[in-house]
Picture 1 (cartoon, rainbow, N blue to C red):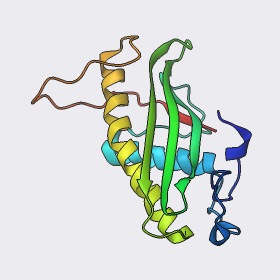
Picture 2: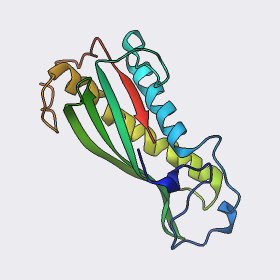
Picture 3: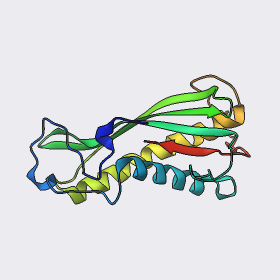
Picture 4: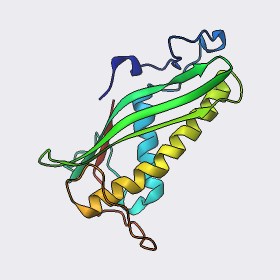
Length: 171
């Protein structure tokens, strides 16, 4: 789920910024769909054998990852721009019980005040988040407990992916 302002292909810039170079800048898809696809790819890259199902798969998953976008825009001052991505993630089981929840946020500086530099910075922001989110989700599912912040994995013990990864849903 998310704020309606993120249901757009337009590259969003914070209201306090006047950046003419971004006036016609667009993504290839809506922010919701891009985030969802990148999350699925991240889980597939982590463990393709237990990759998540897509929301339109006709299977009832054991778990679902729900995301709520809070920010996906260029922020900052004209001389210190950053690409910010922020969203909450919740893992729920098939009965609707909350298994885990966490807020993910990252802002990466832009090299130049232009859309191509923003794309690169958004990619870096997402990569940083994905490296935190995927192990967090795998650990939460493996633990199967209802804490909102799963305990950390003991040193030297790898995080294993769950048998049923579930789906990712985001808007």
